[in-house]
Length: 123
Image (cartoon, rainbow, N blue to C red; front, side):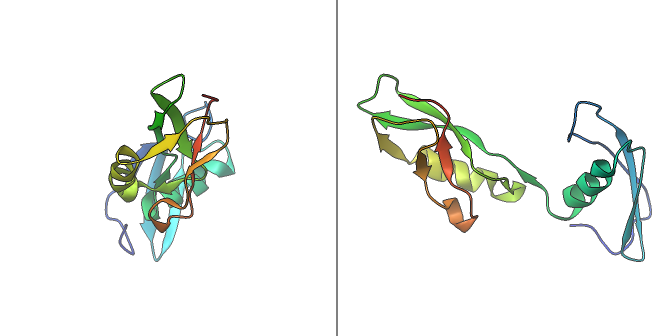
């Protein structure tokens, strides 16, 4: 989390689109000032990244009785970045029974994040 104001600007690269804009972010009086973005999405990205960073969790879940040993999976929505390791611990302890279809929910509401872990392929 970021304080009410920042003395030095923070430099970051926007990852929302392939442009990869170099952003310079400052905060004063509770407002973010973002420079370097070529579209409004860069400003939203910078604020979110500095106040509540989230990521899509990608992983693999063990499959019992399937054609393959593990099924690639991902979170249905982004989860807080600081919960990624804890979520992976839950995934490592999880097993699902075959057959598994693309989009199947393998783990519901992981760590009460509101995100389901869903299968990315059939197996």
